[in-house]
Length: 277
Image (cartoon, rainbow, N blue to C red; front, side):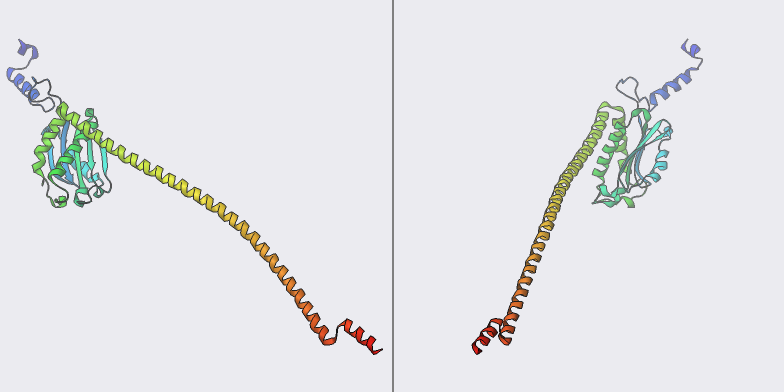
């Protein structure tokens, strides 16, 4: 009776049920109510445009080709955490820069990318990216690995780890909580760096205020010194004038005496004339 109502033959019902049970968006077992939709569609880790490791949840999703479109657009001169929108999917990535890995410069060209459903938000995908970055660098240490020399899929041994993390972060509550925890830790780290920078700016501002205060004091002291030096210069000028006048009077008096002794003083000439009489 069910076959007649649906208008489909029995073998078509079997195909329909098989498609539902095997769909990666639903899960492999509908009897497990804890099984949730797989929202992380595809993920890869690449050096520049060379994909080193990759996993796609479903080959029919055609999301793995999006990485080849995004990777050439990524600039590794500065660290980046960005998202692109493509139809119903978000493409999230974390791009490292040489400043992130002073001991291994080739690691500065690594990109950690995931394609996720737009309904999944951003916190969990970025938490997943933080986790795969941590585990990838723990296995392939930047100081010991030259990522530039690795061929395409040269880190394919990491594919199974990508798959496990995609399943755990995309379907299990614990994985989602871990992803959110990773994002919160990143936020706390950024907040700590910002707080430290603000403290440095405030400290620099206090030093600038102190320098300005000292400059003002120095300016006032310089003005007082100028005034005092001007007054001292004037007093010294008057002393020099008085000394020159006194010296001039002394010279005139001495000349008068010398001339008087040579030619005779007026008093001496009067006394001499009176004696002659």
